[in-house]
Image (cartoon, rainbow, N blue to C red; front, side):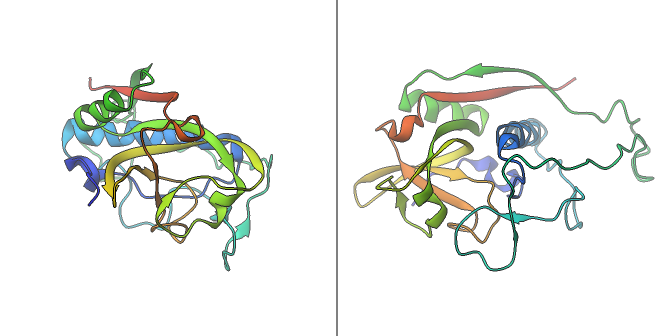
Length: 208
């Protein structure tokens, strides 16, 4: 059984990033939002809506039947920013309701310390070398075997576990929920596989 810290119920939903370069930004925002939820013990993302952005989902992974292809390097015109809160937000002004990150700090290349950080403060962002075999991942503990190198990729590490003697990280990807294990996947842990334990960062949330 995977060990998922008690904040797992406030982890934001998974969406596919249309622009490859935006993956790091999206994960940083997701971690900050989750951290804010941990600090206050509540969800902070929209409820009861299809999506909080104007662009339809796209499919980056293999054999997906109904999403558009994600176009490398594509540029999408963002919708205008609304600087008014919904009527129900009468207790806070637009400025007061903004969420800020106080800063970021890099985790040491130490699997145990990364686990301690996740258990203590919440999810972290990890970067690793991406190969095309991950696009075909359906389940189980991922370990790169073959395929073309596609660059670097960023995900959130939200927990860890052991299955049949193999340690793994539990990760939240950004390729929609029909990919992998409902949008999540597991990767071998403690081996610095694909350099996943080298570039790990965590957020500090500004509460006031």
